[in-house]
Image 1 (cartoon, one colour):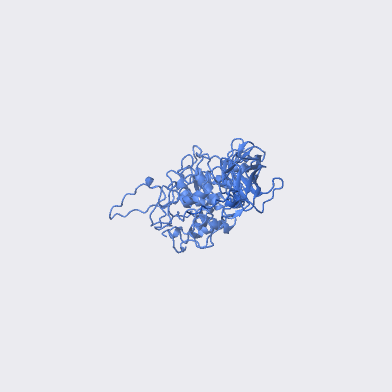
Image 2 (tube, rainbow, N blue to C red; image 1 turned 45 degrees about the vertical axis):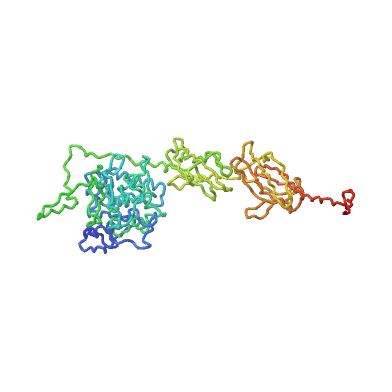
Length: 590
């Protein structure tokens, strides 16, 4: 890595959320005798080993270990410990100024996450430290009125040439690259990580990694993952290393977070200090979209190019008495997210849900999101989830459905349809991003029903012993007068209609494996008919009258008569002596 030695931290200079120790390390980091760590990866000094961190999204990191800016904060901190952070624009080093929209996004993310996950103890200065190292606070606050970076901020293609090898995961939707992924936006999320952690913090209906409000909220949630408490040094280190797996990255972020904790102030958007000094200096790639990157004139041969001045403020002269007070850009206080206002979910309708197999549930779960005073809260994302062993699904075939509360604070789940499995399960409603108690709805799936079974008129069923019944038999199943398709009907061969017990002799059904059975379960077709084809019922070896008893859930029942006859006894032909005619006398020959 080609970062300047003067911009490195002394080895081992780390700190927890309380940044006082990192401030001391910052002063030590720029002493002449600093020894840089050994370089062994393009994205940072040393990749972490197993056990150093457990990234919340699985293997990898939020940025794909993309390059970052290595410049450290100045030794002259903006103010002494304990001083106010509400400094005027003209006070303090230029590096302490954070563009207004970027500053607002960090504060809003801190407020939102502290309301939904107070145990994380996320400080906005940590977001500011990461934002400084990743993009120089969105390239000095170059964002539009909605907080979207303009031009957009892209890392180099992660094609394995000096960087990690990450094939395209988003079809170029976020980074414009359909071959490889790139880190995107002010907080430099790679598309695969954004797909999991992306947020819509400014409520514009989009999850945009190029928007500082969306990106800051997502970064805060990512850092707080795995139940981390950022007030603990170990958790803080793990969180930062999960963002970019480099020890120098960890030290650099901690230094900037400590610097901002000592004091900062807002500057107008677009006037922040531009980033310099990247961890991949000497490698190719840039953070700005190629179409907006200005070209650099080629130097004349033999002409020594002047070294660009270091972007470090000089001494600040005492200001003269101004004729007018300095103009500062007003910043609206961060809005409280709708989810943070909710204190409970109330069940409004359909707490008990029932359906028969393969049919739609009547009604759908409905909840109201209420604040502490019992007033409805609009714009809250509610997740409805099917929990339990069931094949029932929402209308789109999924087991979860997201619904946003309307102006009355109500959210109704998507239509729910039962599968073929009977039993009970739960539909659970929760507020997205909150740990409030869930609202549970009990759901039960029962078998399809038929209250009437009727044989379709046809021939009587007769057969001789040792053969099979050749007549086709059809039975119609109805429920409340309507045809009942998909009903499971039990058929049993019995010897009596008044005392129906399975027969031990006589007719039987031909089983699927060819064996004879006397009890089977059949299902009515889409037309509500149950059909016995020729040969489905075997006559057996015993003559007599038998019955097929049919029963269905819902009370439907009927009998089909079976008559088994013995084969007819053949009649012998009469002999000549039994005919009564005289026996002819032979005529003698002449």
